[in-house]
Amino acid sequence: MENVILLSRNTLNRGILTLHPQLAESMGITQITARKIRFGANTYQSIVDISNELPLNGASLSEDIMDMLNIPQHCTLEIKQIGNEIQIGPFIGLLAGYYQSSIKKYLDQLRDYVLLYHEIKGAILVFSLDHVDKSNQTVKGYLYNPRTKQWEEGTYPYPGSIFVMTSSVSSAWIQHFKSVIGNVVFNDFFLTRWSIHKKLAGSIGVKCYLPDTNLYGSPQDLYYFLKKFPNLTVKPLNSANRAAIRVFLKDSNTLVISNLRTRETKSFKFYNRDQAFSIFRQYFKDGEYLIQESIDVTGYRTISVRIMTIKDNSGQWKAMGLFTRGDQSGQNEGNLMPLVKFNKEMVSEFLEQSDLYASLTYQELIHIAIDAVKEVESMGVHFANGAVDITIGELGDIWITEIDYFNPSHEIALVAGYPNLYYEILKTNMLYAKKLAGF
Image 1 (cartoon, rainbow, N blue to C red):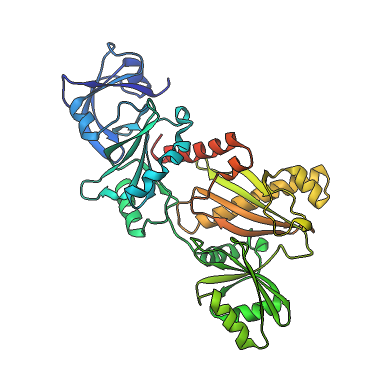
Image 2: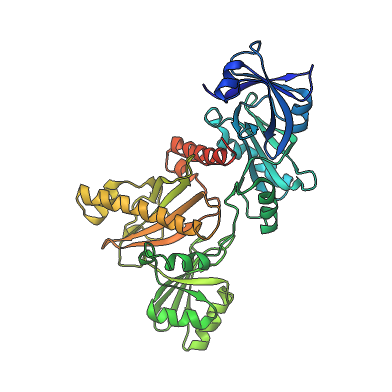
């Protein structure tokens, strides 16, 4: 029997949950009993009764419990029994920012996550940290109403799981939430590119796919790395709001420096080491960047692929989409080409492989991406939503160039012309959150 319930409010009794006999039987309840009722982080001791006067899958909850737990009747809710608790939910929290004023702007965009609500169900709350009441363990936010398809403001207990969508969450906040609701807060961490690189470099299965990389401690580090690799990419340890920079030693006295986000390029002449150091100091602060050999260098054909890696409702990693830019040939270098879905035929054409070998290479890319995110996960973080950037060279060499763990945009699927895949990815995020919430 489906465990979706028709929830009604009982105004005649107190402290009681009444179930239809078939619903009660499906939950293993055959007689009047005592159970805790849970919604999100809150519980309420209750008597569980059975009545065939209710509709099939009907559940009637006394008004005092409905009000104490603040259970929204307009949501499509499920019910299940775990131990001595009866859980009503799922109750999923989307932590979207620090200030409520900032998350209001994103409510329309966040509606994408509930477009397939009929497959997710439950109570879905968008909230910000400034409206969290630690003392009472309540949060004021915007709850999705599937009947009106609008976000409605209200105050609720802590959710049963939290999907972190903002970088403004401190570790103290995360530990607070976990102390109350357990390890059901995901994408809740901050790592630097260097810490991720060191972890991957210690992995037998992944380290062979890493470009040569070093920490930028001073201009001297970059200067001597250029002696080894005249074409480098310098990346900020923290990817937020700062672009990667391409540094190219054009000849023994000429540096070409390009911002990979704005495409702004400048050339500099230098005639000794100190002059080069002075140029580097204009762009980079000591200890805040890493240096990486560039794979996509002039004269060597490469193709770059982004692999969307998502945990599904069983908690398993899966690759939900591979994307690249169309026509990455040399004549289009420097131009931003349209995004397209990456497929086996592209592998076959680019590497001049047979269908069989191209299929094996395609699967290898997926395995590498999933192995990489599993390595990040093994650092003790709750990781479930990421993307892996991989570059393939014309000789078949494969390189991991980036792991985007912080709420990567899945709109890449929309831009490439696959709206159904876009919504399927968001639904998968939500179904994982639903699993964490106990459903």
